[in-house]
Image (cartoon, rainbow, N blue to C red; front, side, top):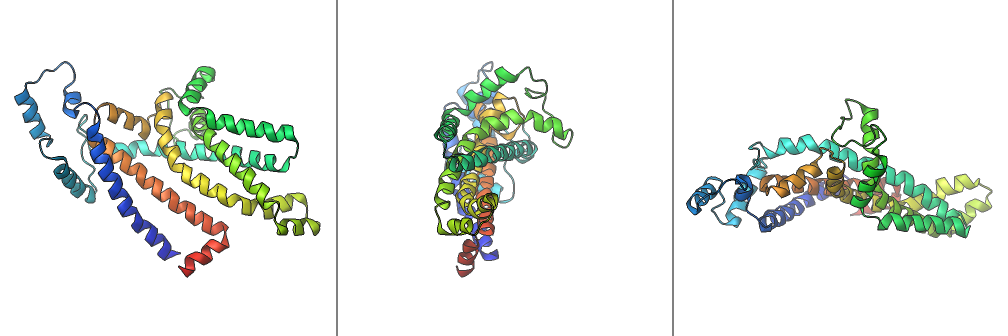
Length: 320
């Protein structure tokens, strides 16, 4: 298992290298110049002055040269300086990152406690009304856009004092209950789509497992239905759900970008939007690299959880 983890960590290097190349070149294709955004609309600069500014900020050299220089600084742990604030990029990202991570995992938790029970209920209930109702609810969850649902929540529940942050965010360690209450609706807006996906995977996997011979054997032995469902059926049916949940955790982190703006949450997603508006190249590149790193690490943790649940995976890992 140690060798497996080491190999997966090594695979992080080419992934991040590829992400850094794509992001570095793509952000420079965004319409508008970073220097023009820096100067604003009230300042008119002559071509000679613009050329001098390009030289000062190092934008007069070819993009591949700029990338190599940036990559060299990145290997030393330096993500660069923000063009707008002049501050280092890494401290600003680390300051906003805890909120985005908390929002992501809170959304994952809500999607699991909603999706798994509904999926089990849909698989066990042979009543067409219950089954069809749950499936239609899941279809609606997949169809509703996150930003539309978040905006609707702000309009509908803005009267719930303390439930919609809108600039009044409180940190987790400062006031835990207030923090969790403020993040309930943002997390629900992000996680409702994943809850629908988990519900469908749980339902399909449970239906398949319930037809297995060992389930019929357990029932023939006279075991209680609850024990058969929880101890035998659910443990095997949950494997595809773990894969789906882990794979989508990275997408939840990406979906937090829009939701943080709707609810005015001071997270990394909102910081990324402002960086894109202002063409702050160093800040955009740093945020995307952090998100890509978290995405790969979450997938690694998912594989480890998968191996802990299924002994066959552990055996295959030892043999490899």
